[in-house]
Image (cartoon, rainbow over all chains, first blue to last red; front, side):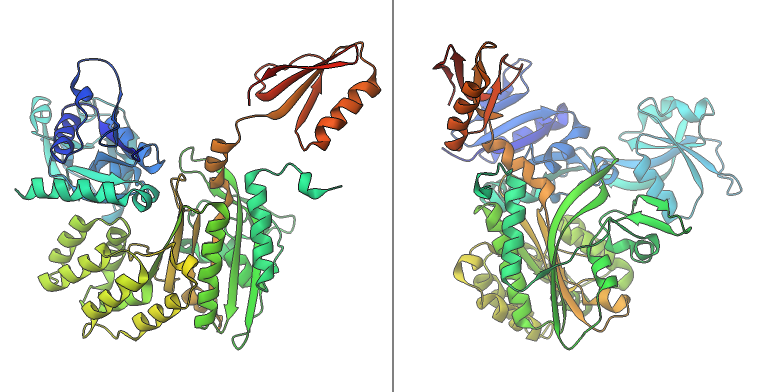
Length: 210
Length: 374
């Protein structure tokens, strides 16, 4: 029996795009396209098992070895800092991690800057590198309303098109880092399933270069 | 009492085997206190896996810590004898933050350290013991080896500024070639040198294939003498040891502490490295020692992942006796089963959720098997 390669895909449009790349690379699993609520799909002939997980959990599945490889956003990798291999930039799911606030905002260095964010680690490291004293307000959603309600001075969040910010009368002040989807691998799995993993990487590299 | 019949779990069996393996090679056991002065760790925080430490104030007012690491204590408490060799092994608990829960965890660690005038034979012996330690756990193992001295020489040769080295080494450790390339471009490193660095990180495999190839690539770039010495050490290893060795320059450790050889061991089925080690002469120098040092640790807590696959039953046999059964009768039947080497639970009522291979009843002196799940 073929050794199964376990792949954690992020649920949603990004995951579907990624699956198409894997399919083109020869790791197809037709059952994944059936319209049902199943989360695990496998193709024993090809030796691959896919599972849909919450995008922010992909890195955990891979680091803990439940998945051999997976696709996660760079934002998640920077925030969680998993001990994994980051093997490929897939050049999709592009956006940026940015500092935004009300248009009239002026940073007063004499005051502690109040930063609302889902990405506490990224925000902390960014401001630490600038030597700026901050107060992190960790939120789990609707970050954009924090400056409007005076909960925070600025927000640190992902910006894709900027539409949500504009609609809430916010502007981007600084870009912290560019984000895209990355192919990651569990360090131990990479030792024992390197042939399959390298095959996928080489095939996808060819697709990206085409 | 026959110790062979003792019911040891997998971790314990591995622990005893490793202790005996290290003793056979002249390593003596080093026993230490659970506590150490906090100051030792505060001065060497970067050497520790995590900088969170459990501290408390001792009765004399000194700030103490529950050991997060063993190596620092051994160095601190051992004599500096640079002209000879001291070999010790340990089997201790350390206290570290668990990444998932952010709470402290007690971790059982077995390891060894070799101090003094470290020569090629000592390195060869340590690598052999590291491989044998992995094989004690499973034959499906890999020991990734890198050489920080060679990597540092390459970074010097291609003019990587010191302020960027931490990031460069981080990307090398992640096999993150795309970010390694873009950072090198930002640092205005030539395309040829970026390609060379990428090739070193990407070239992995058996020592006798990879090292001659790299020697050829690095000729004229760095002094290849350390690479030749590295090859000679690996060539001297027995073939069954060589079989599980993989050269991989993505194994990186803090260059402020480690130099020369660094390595990490993996077992198929365990998601992270179970063994980690290297030569740490720079840490010795930082601690004002003239001796060199090399050693490794095996993280026994990770082995539970393997054990769960094999241990499917709580006991081999349940002897369910009738309440009116005479005690001596129950005892003699239990003795008969335990003499066969079986794990036996004798009881008058079956406990809930117990997983057993065989259920035997004892009533009116009659023994009968009523269930067999083996």
